[in-house]
Length: 130
Image (cartoon, rainbow, N blue to C red; front, side, top):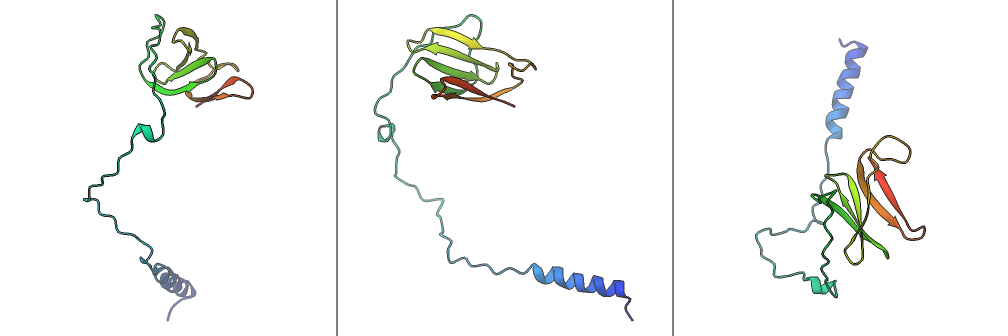
């Protein structure tokens, strides 16, 4: 003779085991041969019309070491270096303009500069502090 609690356990056991059954339809899957070599190449010329190199003026205060992001605006080239946690700004001719280095806990400071973007409409940098 089973007690009411034991009935509940037996019913739950069958519910859990019957709910684990799944019906798997693999007709929509496509096999991929990872050993097959492809000959499709992607060239820069497919999406870039020209490439130019710009020598950046060395800065005695800061040495770039881990460039994480680069944004080019009409006036400046902004470079985020995650290692030094600063944004360096260069003019379009490569000369050094200024540095954004406001690390701290005040309202106009950042703790860990993770990412940034340039708001073209308001012509300002937007910083993501993590």
